[in-house]
Image (cartoon, rainbow, N blue to C red; front, side, top):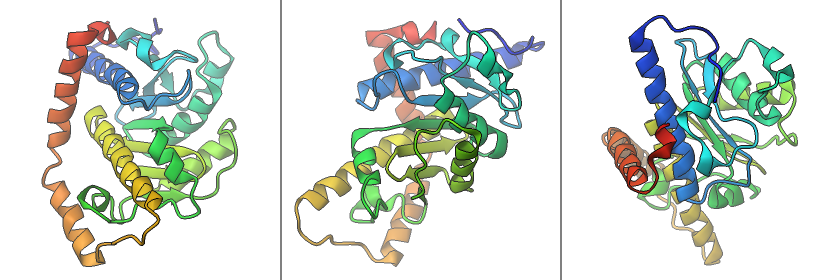
Length: 255
């Protein structure tokens, strides 16, 4: 069970953090449901402070299927002394999430993993998601691409480089690595990840056909992407129903 960073004085703050813990724990369990997990690696985080610097993160080397709300570590991006403590997070998790939360206030929630199709797409010389159907068009001109893979992200400079590669985007396709998705809420970040993996699967299957891609015009692709924005609230409905599925099978993520 994690140790609080500091005492919370307001019940509303406590309730808000607890709900955030529950939602983030659900995201870990759902990543297993969709087969996006990888051994005891990868990491999700969510900011609890307005500036984003205080954030929740999964403990070192805990399988996603076991993560509970109470297990999540509460960290401060400006305090790296945690790395010398008994509950130190996994170094690559601190490197990426500490750097992003310290520098990108818009990335309240950050989900980083290596889902099969997005990771396969990331290994191509051109890992962009091209608008070849309505799901892939969702991301037209809306994904940052990082082609400067620097090995395992376990030093400060690599974390800073990744944060800079994100810029103002909500999604970073990490060349030769995987993908990271950011948003204001867990539900929205999870929806980004869900559709990125779906779009990457479509791309890889289309490439496997060995025939030329039928790519939408820029105008039609942008029209389709804008159309998706009208359905942005569906992310919350989707996530709530996914939690209902978890509640029927194993509600322990809420503990």
